[in-house]
Image (tube, rainbow over all chains, first blue to last red; front, side, top):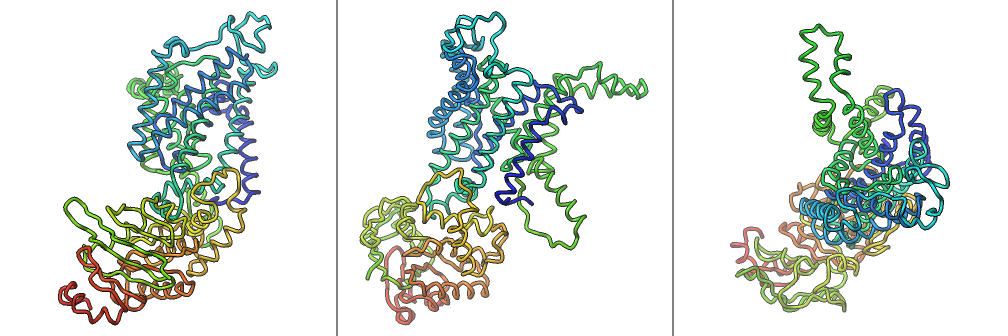
Length: 378
Length: 251
């Protein structure tokens, strides 16, 4: 079990993770996921879920409004493109700053309550933000059309350059679509993951676990839980804002639907599916959900007929019509079934499955070793 | 020298007068027991001292610091620790981490943001926490998740957590409640052992065996009023105390 890795162990862990992320185009190609649009989503939502997990996994505070920060990050990034130019770096920095300020305000109010009341408060704030973005704040957000970069925008630093094609974010000449966009997102994910790893191992991290386990003991131990929860709420909101900025960096368009409660729910699903409180889990969860969304929603009746063509005709028709419910538009049904199975049989998410398999393997290889105390893997 | 002085404390819940003009003081370095029948107001009294409840009137002075109106974590920071009736520990964390947290709270205060420092590289804290676990005899279990401990071990861990902060005053709310006789005796031994450190203790207790083996002084509370105070031997023979305990069956 990797309950506590040594500093060297952590570095090796991070190095392996970094190599795995950067070589995703190679090893995910055989399962049909080796194209940049999907891999960008893996990285972006992996980052979003990693940040969400810092709050939910460590402190147990279930925010149901994290999409608000995603949206704030997106709008900020597009405004940065409009005003400053198409460079992704100022866009990312400004998005992190604005979403941090937003998180500070929302967190300050919401963290007065815990448990279900905290969740409802964050949900209410997120829906408020969504409705504001959709209607009242149209001058800033461009309402239901969505905010995009126009040729006529000032773009302080590159507005002079004459271009006729569509406006695409670029980092000193490297266009942020396709593979360029993926590698940019992947590097940002790695930075985010590294910071999360440090937080997990830090004195701050253990205080956050203390918040989750026993706030009463914490107060009688001379610690004030409020600033700890607020600090991690802001950090978590900044991750979400950065993820929102990455969405606009790879595709410079921000819409209000990004802030809707379904988007907040999705990151909760990703984190729980992968394993809340673990470092890798949320990234697995995010990748799995995005993979299903892309692969299963692309299936249609035609592909199903091809898959089940080996069956006799009288069987093929009903099988195809039943399987048809789970693909295409109905891929959410597959996701729902998968989610139920995991929550019922593996409450610790995918990471619990991984550590169970690891334990089986260990027991098989060395029976002499006494059964050690186990804790969730990270 | 007095370390704690409670003057004229009243506390009512609706129409119920839980504490009625309680005056109470604790001498430095002693073990002071508070006993009394169920519903006498012992826990209310303790909660008023530690900041969980605000007394309606009266004052609680710790040395020359007024504890009235302070938050529980501020009270802890001036040197008052508390052991609960049911052990309050961080049950999802390892024993070592359980002791590391209060040790850090003592050194770094109510809040410190150090997200990039490695906790396992903080040798001062780690060593101190491990020594504390050794003192209470739990060192070999340092990596065990504390929720899986027995009741007696949880109590020992909680004591280690409190002691790691070198408190000036330790408040214990029925430290042996719900324990087997063997665990109770172990806990008494441990409490006697830590008495050598010179920590002043206030113990709320039901079990007279515990009270008479530990306390230097006993205060008897009944219906929110102090009815007797003195050395354990004197209290044992006091007719008012026997009256309060329904004919003295417990004594």
